[in-house]
Length: 352
Image 1 (cartoon, rainbow, N blue to C red):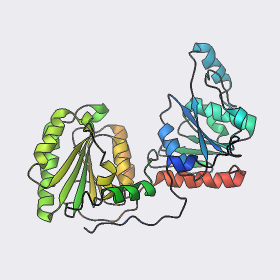
Image 2 (cartoon, rainbow, N blue to C red; image 1 turned 45 degrees about the horizontal axis):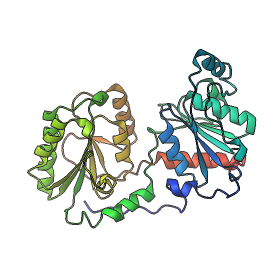
Image 3 (cartoon, helix red, strand yellow; image 1 turned 120 degrees about the vertical axis):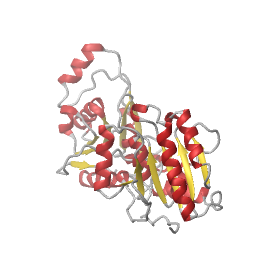
Image 4 (tube, one colour; image 1 turned 180 degrees about the vertical axis):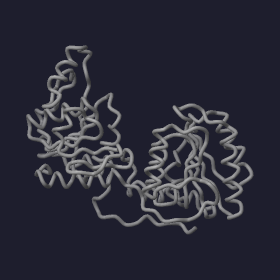
């Protein structure tokens, strides 16, 4: 399979944190700035950050820390659930230096703060994931639940990832010469943890590794393997043994030195994901090459649902025989969600 070039993308359609945070005036906040409300206990902070980094406008990260106010704080939050509440919020909101034009939030408590800011400042509200009653105030809800798209609701295929076209292009440039000695086709093998972060069965890992080694030997290619230490020491040893008879590079996540993960993925012709980590599979789908799922041990119901959704959308196939080349677009849910947020900003004039 020939090496793929990263497709061109419009200037400003992708960004990184340093570029996205720029543009703040020295005397205070830029008018209409985006506030990223980061609840210390919410699970969608990384997804919101991925979206914010792709907006192409200045944004401010506002941590939300909560006091141990007990039932009194919970009661205050509940009474203001539908209209917004700061009950139990310990960290001050930086309103003295400017008001937000739009908020990005995740979790129920973040949604209540965002709803309060909407009422107090007139800011637009974008909520990621489940929000409870406060979600009624959201102008746009982004969700990875399997729901239908509708007015003010944008479904995404899993949490948006913080890997955009710029990061992929940079990884290709940084690792191209280092991997130039390896022939094509190159196969990236991602080994994640077992179900519920348990260790993977070494015999299953060895079976997958030897099968891929035999397949690549016949094609004259090489394997670029990335092993998560949570897979277990015995599983990683089994992986090394299974790859030993073929041309390969193996990087374990606990090894010192530069992390080659993005370079391996950006310069591979296909990717196989083994193990039980939804984020690992979503990360693989960010790259515009064939992605296969290798069954290793039992699978959690939530993971099976994600695999099914990605397969139905044409992003993954199950590893059941030969590895072939097939075309698929890169999964860019962060860019798609950022586009919807920019549209909202234009409609409500939140861009400053």
